[in-house]
Image 1 (cartoon, rainbow, N blue to C red):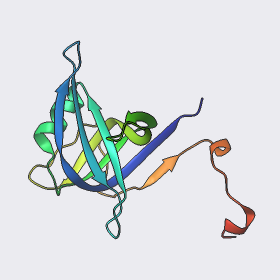
Image 2 (image 1 turned 90 degrees about the vertical axis):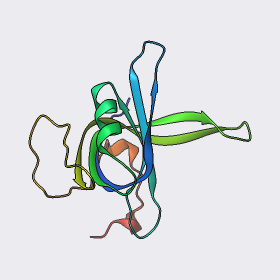
Image 3 (image 1 turned 180 degrees about the horizontal axis):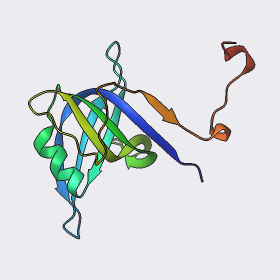
Image 4 (image 1 turned 90 degrees about the horizontal axis):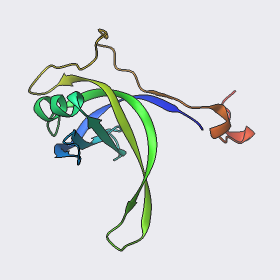
Length: 133
């Protein structure tokens, strides 16, 4: 089993949508564009208290930083075929610009924006010609 933890920054592409599970736990999803030059969209899923905070603090166009676990989920497309979607299971977030300045993280973060992802090296396949050194 591999675990991929990521911290991503970007612009909220779609407004958050809140739903509830059968156990009445709030789940809020939204789409984040992590590349300003071309659309690189990733689905963000927030549960519990984070779901409530995201719904109230974040809207389309806001710049935010999110932290969480990357996972691949299967969904059924409109044509009935199964599709794999990468999403981030949200642990914490910080709104950098927009209507509200909010952070769900218990530890304070600097204003510096960080983009990185940690993955196990066995999951990364790079040919020797792609190594820049």
